Length: 75
Image 1 (cartoon, rainbow, N blue to C red):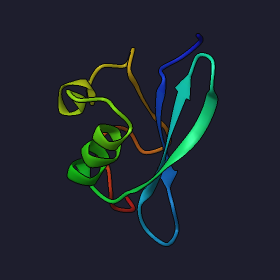
Image 2: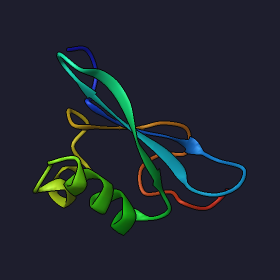
Image 3: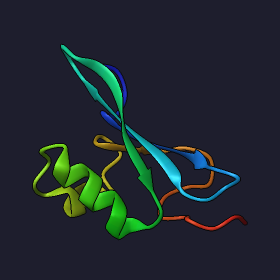
Image 4: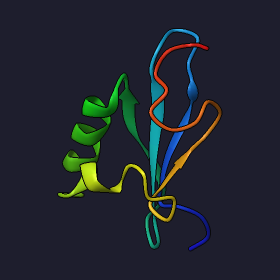
């Protein structure tokens, strides 16, 4: 599998960031929209990732696109 399995996409003009998860055999699917670190962790936990909060700064697990990690407001 190439790249991190969790992708936090660019900030939406209407707020929040889309979160996708890539699974080796199932492909990529959208988990939902996160509005802060807390809602991101909840989305990941619902997807079956129990220690999600510990993974947010690990680039082998999470790819933060456009805006960098933990940025939830427009610059």
